[in-house]
Amino acid sequence: MKESALRDLIAQKISQLKPGLTLLQKEQYIPGKHGTKSFIDLYARDEKGRHVLIELKRSNIAARQALHEVSKYVEQVKQHFGAKDSEIFAIIASTEWGELLLPFSRFCEDAGFSIEGIQIDVTEDHSDFQARPISPLATIRGRLIAPWHHIYWYTDKDALQRGITAIEGAYSAKGIDDYVIVSFYLPDPSTPEERRAALLAEVANMLKVPQASLSTSLASFSPPTYEYMAYTAVQMLPDETCLQIISCDEALFEEAQNAILLMSTEERARYLHECVASVPPFPECDYREIGYPAKFALFYQQEDGTILSTIRRGIFARNTLLPNSILYSELQGEDGFTSQKYKETVAMQDTAHVKKLQKDIGAVLKENPVWKGHLLQIIEEIKGEFPRAEITVSIFNPGTGIFTIYHTFTKKNGLSYLPCYYVLVRNPGDTRLYFGALAEKGPALTFSQLMKKYYHGSLAALLETVTWGGRDERDSYLVEDLGAQYQSYRFDILHGTATAFFTLQDAKWRPCGPVALPVLFQIYAEKNQSLVREILETIKPHDQGTFFECHPANP
Image 1 (spheres, one colour):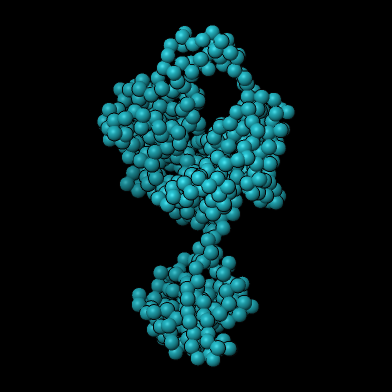
Image 2 (cartoon, rainbow, N blue to C red; image 1 turned 120 degrees about the vertical axis):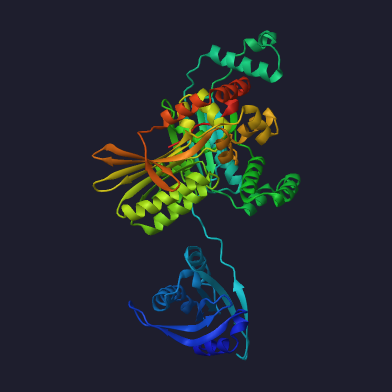
């Protein structure tokens, strides 16, 4: 059947292609200022009054041209009719989708207008046809390291090498091909006496008994030192792959199938990856713990630590253009997937990269609407004022609420636990720095009021959040009730010196005095001394060091 005959058949039964369509013209001519003249196969109107552009194809060879032609038609319709993207609906109808489905799926993801694919099945006598919608494939994001890592500790280098072999064997047995193993040497600066004292304190606290009551044999025990580590992370596994891996354990498989039904996408992914780790075989190690991006950042940034090797398998090995530095950055969560940390450098002339940046900012700050709005406004401002600039965006958004205050006062390098962001604009001549920080806002609730409002008055409920890094999806509300706010500032820089300071209020930049993150937090702490003191005094007795692991991962 020729394409012209197919066009005439569908034109006669246009509503059969898609209900609500009214044919306006066959072979609609659309003049264009650039390229060849265009004739749209079928030009119609739908029930929403949109311009419907129908492109027909009847073979895989012809289908390859469809996306190019649709793009051209859309731009020419916008020029000729003055139509907006929201007023255009493109339909690709084809008898063959083998060559077209994958690029069509990507096209749907990127298009700024509505588009739909339809499979056409023509009867043998060519007198009629059936139409059914085509579902786009899920677009492949590419490299995406699952943020649920695993850490294997060893007492010496030989044990580490045996452990790495065992880890690779375990992944192979489970059918996991794409993974990374980073091995570290991390010397322990503590003395045997210090390690023994820490162990006794931890055991005494767990048993709720005086330290002096512990047996002499335990008191003389010298804990081993684990200075060699294999840090592992895998490419994000699809749900169906996880279920296939855990199907070897019938009870766990049945439990997982039922459990994931009521879970969100993120909860389901985390749960299934944990299930995968809980089925044998288990790698050989002296000590094991869970890892996550902030932990990797802690080890990676440890001054006296050394990376011994980086083993890359599957996609990580095949991608020879991927430097280890980028891999380490993504292991620290700087791709924004964890919604806590993000870092990217973008040329403003690269519109596709800028568009992705805006999308990433929206995803990373989905639970921080204040900074999300500020940063999206800032990107638009830079597009207008510095269209040829290169910018670096760095965001640290821990979302830890009350624990933000606690960790800032109690942890080493405490200020690194404070949420912040910066946008550095590099432009020939003038330069600009945008900066976000926590600032004092007004009266805070008391600690008791905070506990009742967010944790039903239960300290255990607050402490439980530490098991997932202290993150609380209500952080933006907690910050306000803590008497603080997410604020944004702008420094105009000339010849390396900040010459003007502004703060963002009601979507406008207003002049202010010089500001800095430590000073802003000091002002907040001084105005909320009683609340800060009560937070520290209440949580500190329950902090046994490693129990509250929420390591900094700020820019």
